Image (tube, rainbow, N blue to C red; front, side):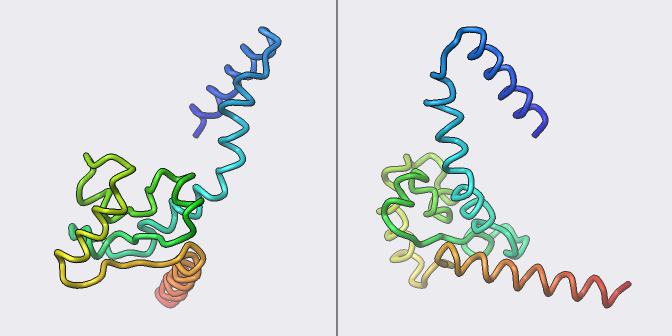
Length: 134
């Protein structure tokens, strides 16, 4: 994280020295505008899932509206992405359907907010277990 912040400061310094807002308009602005959505996805993918080697039980596929999938380059099809990481982002929806059909059972799918509720419940359970041991 410190490295990222240092890089941002360097880019800011170069931009100010060059009297250009190009970096802010094309990189930092979009980054800051999408960070909250990215965090919803980032935590929703694996947080609270079992620590196993089985991609189909340790990864969530996040369901959501098409604009969200577009902004996140279809990474919401995270199970498909992990199972076949070489598949390009635009082919992940089709791959997801093929995986579900091939497995003969659904993969773990949650909406973005449903995943967050599940994660908060898991965190609360972890906290209660930790306190019980203390």
